[in-house]
Image (cartoon, rainbow, N blue to C red):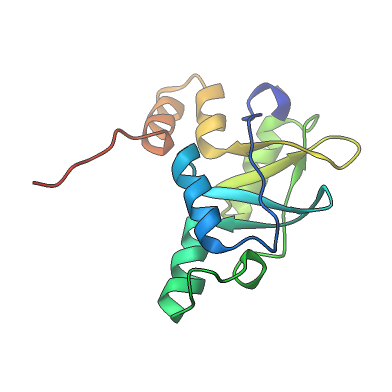
Length: 142
């Protein structure tokens, strides 16, 4: 099975000069924890909800801090025609939960996550991982 058979295709991107508040709102609206960062359609980084919390808020940075100041610049990626089992092993070795997926022209075409891989895996372990890493219902506190 190829990565293109399992990946999520509907991916929003942000620009490095946008601020972290915009990124956080996009994550909330899309119910995701990561956004690829593109400059002139070239993938230049990734920003996660954890980046916003640990690299910005915990450091006392303002809400208008630019994404470029807190994003991960080193981007690991895979190609849509790569074999899913090989990519899954690489993700495991590197302890990466999500990878941007590029086409042969090096343009972003999706993201593959542990949940996507688990959904493609028809074993009970794959089902459990998908359930754990998938979307969760909104919780309320009383």
